[in-house]
Image (cartoon, one colour):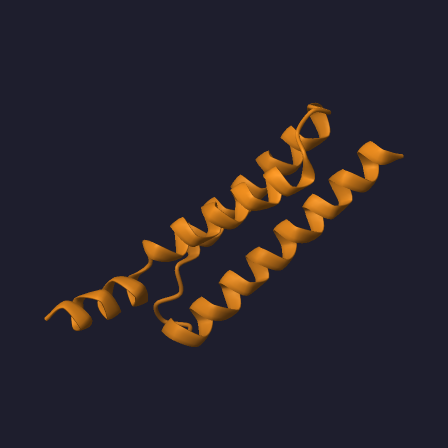
Length: 91
């Protein structure tokens, strides 16, 4: 029961972080410049994290959620709207 509950919490966190990424990128870039590749990488990374949590009992829920949150931030940093904003700030 504990293993299933931990996996469900990780899955919920992955869904929420992916939805937040999608909403923020849609608000920043619109439909024309939406980063579909980064979204796909984020979804596949989330599936891998959930499966690793399911397979290994010694992984804590907080560790997996933190790793995926950092992965989401990394994906967001390499999208076109963020790069354009950084270019504007630097110049």
